[in-house]
Length: 101
Image (cartoon, rainbow, N blue to C red; front, side, top):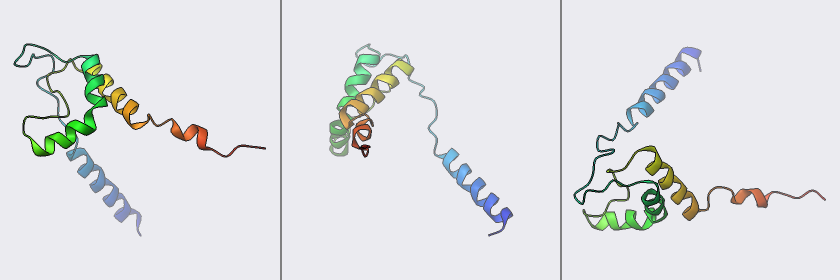
């Protein structure tokens, strides 16, 4: 394969991936109908129950796995930590390596 064709393929893949990137959340730091803004602890809880709310969202338009009325990075951190806690955190492979004898 020529270098030009390879470079063109890489650029096309990068443009395709960039087109899939989400935009900014315009509802950050704005209260919901109840007047609340989700923070770190709600993000942690929402991350922990994300699998169940995702399944619920398939059957109901009133269930959403992610709260858009959040305070930004702190909510996102809590959400990701909740996902990691529920799904194992990615550290499970540390103890599975072969042991030297």
